[in-house]
Length: 479
Image (cartoon, rainbow, N blue to C red):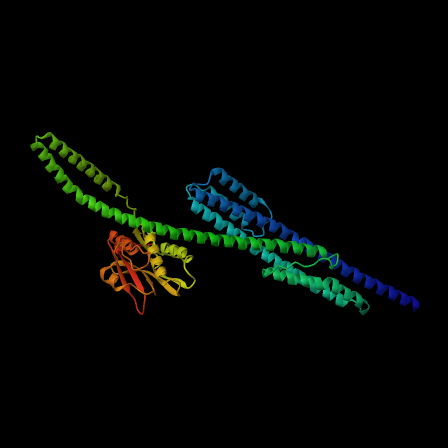
C-alpha cells in the first residue's frame, strides 16, 4: 500500500512536473514566436521608410525642375530608377503587387516624350499607391499577430486552469506574469490598428516578456514617426496648394493690369491711325507750298516744319507696329475639367462661408483659346467672391448645351448689378466697386464676341447677379 502510494505520489509529481514543464514550454515557444513575428514588421518599417525617402527625393527633384523651368536631367532620372530597382529587388515587401508596381514606375520614368509635369504626377501617384498598399498589408499582419496572441492567451489560460488545485499559487503567478501582459499587448496592438500609439514600461515586466514589449515599443515609436511624417507631408502639400492658388490670384491681378494697358494701347492705336491721314495731307500741302516759295528764310522754316511732321509720322507708325499682339490659338478644351481646376484653386482663397457649386454637363467640350477661357472663368468667380465678401454665400457655375449655342453661367447671391450697368452694359475703366478697373466684365464680353458669341448680365431674385456666356454651338462637340 505504501509502495503503491509512493508510486502514485511519484506519478502525480511526474504529471505535475510534466504539466509545469509543458506549460513553461508553451510559454517559451509563445515568447519566441511573438519575438520572431515582429522582425518582419521591423524590416517592413525600414522598407516603407526607404520608399518614402525615394518619393520625397523624386518630389523634390521634379519640384526643383518645375521651378527652374527645365526638364529633369537623364542622370538624375537614372539615379531615381536605380533606387526604385533596388527597392523592387528587396525581399521586405508585404504586398505581392509591390515589385510589379515599382517596375511599372521604372518604365514610366524611362518613357520618352513625356512632359515633366505628367511624369511627376505618375511618379507621385504610383509611389503613394505602393506605400498605401504596403501600409494596408502591414495592418493585416499586425491584426494577424494580435489574433495569434489572443489565441495563445486563451491556450495559456486553459493550461493554467487545467493544473491541479495544488498549483493554484503557480496559476496566480502565471496569470499575473504572463496572461496579463499578453492581454495588455493584444489591447495595445488593437490600439495600433486604430492609430493610437502608446509606449509601455518594461522595467517591471517579466524577463521573458521584455523582448516582446521592447519590440512593441520600437514598433510604436517608428509607426508614430511615420504617422507624424505623413501629417507633416500633408500639411506641406496643403500649404503648397495655398501658395499656388495665391500666386494664381496675383497673376489674375497682373493680367487685369495688362488688360488695362491693352485697352489703353487700342485707344492710342486708334488715335494714331486717325492722326496719320491729316498729317499726310498737311505734309503734302507744305511740299506744294515749298515749290511755290522762293524766299530762303521761309523755305528754311517750312523745311523745319516738314521735318517735324516726318518725325511725328514715324512715331505714329512705330506706335501702330507695337500694338500688334499674336492671338492665342484655339484648342479642344474639356469645359468640365477646366472649370473644376479653376474653381478648386480659387476655393483656397475664399472664406469658409463661401461655397462653389457646379452643374456642368458631362463630356461637354469647346474649341476655344484655353488660357483665355480659364482667365474668363477666374475673372467671373473672383468678381462674385468680391461682391459676397466675408458674408455667407454661394457661387454657382452651370454649363450646358442649349438649342443653337452653349451656355456657361456664373451666378452669386450678392447684392447684384447696379441699374446703370444693366442699362448700358459693362464699360472699360468704369466700375461701381472700390478699386475696380471695370475691365473684368469688358474682357469677358470681348472674349465671347471674338468667338462669335455674346455675354449677358442680369439680376436674380431675391438678390444676386448672373453672367451668361452664349457661345456658338459649332465650336462644341462631345468628348
